[in-house]
Length: 413
Image (cartoon, rainbow, N blue to C red; front, side, top):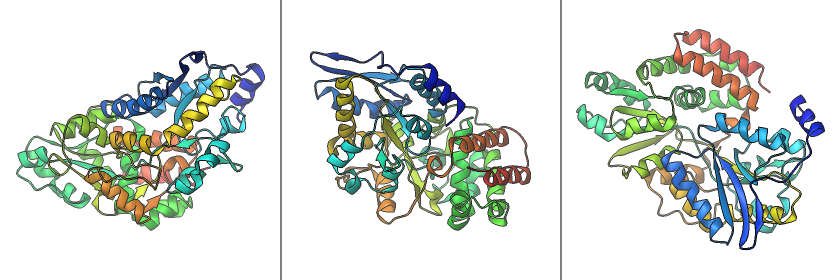
C-alpha cells in the first residue's frame, strides 16, 4: 500500500458522501465521471434516465477533461473522506490500492445474484474487477483503441478513394496535403498519442511482437526489428499530424467530421461524436479496426466502483444501481449511444451501426487483447504517456524513443 493511502487511512475517518441523501421519493446518488463531450454526454444520460425511472435521483458529477484529469480528483475525494456514491474508472489496476485499503464496496453478492460470471463477455472484464476472489466493480462496456476514422469529405475533395488500410492512408497523405487537408488529426495529450502508438504497433509490428512486449514485458522484442519498424511508422505519423494544434480528442474527431483532416486514430468512443453530428457510417466516414491490417480489439473499457459509506440505505441504493448498469435494456441504450460494445454476451445489438458490427464480429471471433489498463500498472502507463507526449511534440529520433520505451518495458510492474 502506498504511503498516501496509509496516511489517509490513519488520518481520516470514512464518511458518507456529502452529496447523497435519503429522500422520501427515493435515493439521491452522486455519480462522478469524465464523459463531457457531446457523444459522451448523450450516452451517460441513458444511465441517468434509467436510474431516475426507478424513482431515485442521479446527481451528475461530471469532471471536465480526460480520465487523466478526473482520476486524481476522484481518488483524492475517496481518500479524503468525501466519497461520491459511484464513480467511473477503467477496470483494471487503477483501483487496486483503494480496494486493498477497504475503501470500495464489495459487489460480489450483486454479481452472484445477477449471474455476471455467465453473461460478461469476455470474462477478462470481470476478472479485472476481481481481487482475491471478490468483485468490486461492474463492467459496463468494451472500448477498443485500434481504430482509424476516415473523412469521406476530405478524400472526395482531394479526388481520392477512401483508404482501406493504414498503408493506403500513408500513401494518400501527400495528395491530401496538396489539397490543403491535414492528413492526421491528433490531440496534444500523451494518452491520445499512446493510443496511436499502440494501434500503429499492432498494424506494423504485428500481433506476436505486440503480445511479447505488452503481455510478456519482453524488452528485447521492444528493442528488436519489429518495433524499430513500428517506431519509424510512428515518426512518420508524427509528421502527418504536425499541424494538428487541437488539445482534446473530440476536437480532433471534429476535424474528421468537418473534413479538415483526413483521419484520426482514436478509440471506438469517437462514434458518439459522429452520431451527434448526424453522420452516417459508410457515407460520411469509414472506420477500420486494427487500422485495416490486423483487425483486433483490446478489451478495455469503463467500470463503475462504489465507495464504502456507513449509511445502509445508500449502500442498498449503490447495489441497486450496480445491477441496473449491467441490465439488458440499459446495456443496449448506453452502448448504442456511446459507440462501445456491451459487456453482456446475451443481448440483441442488431440495430448497431456498421462500425459496431465490425467490433461485435471481432469479439465473436475471439480477436481480443488486454487493454493497457490491465496489462500495465498506472505508474507504468503514465511513464509511457509522458514519453509519447515528449516524442510527438518534439524532434526525438525514432531510435532514441525506441530505447527509452524498451527501458520502460524492462522496468514495467
